[in-house]
Image (cartoon, rainbow, N blue to C red; front, side):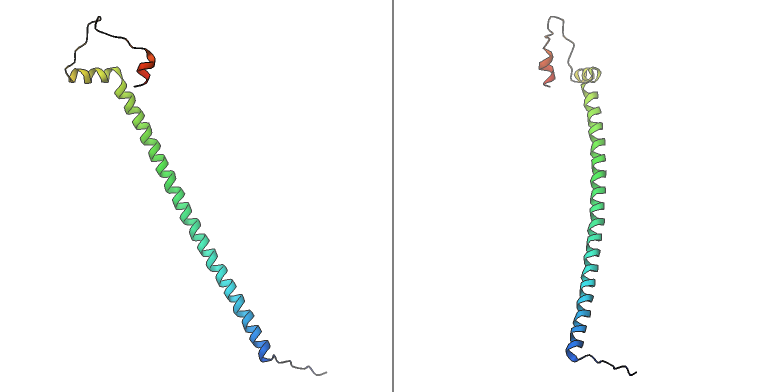
Length: 106
């Protein structure tokens, strides 16, 4: 039994080469897209990490400012500042008491 060898015509060779090139281009494009997306993912992770650190820093700063406000509003601190300004304690007749709602505005 003889086996016939079949040769590809030039047109068939051309289409075979075109298919190989198209498959290669598809795989190359897919690889580039994959690398691009992985890079974006890493950069997004860095951005999230930076934002979280910034949030923690701002939270610490807010807490320290709240403590500073509390210390500045304390009666002993106010008394020291008043004495430093040369103010003296008034007589009981000179003291005017204001309602709580007026004080809360400050």
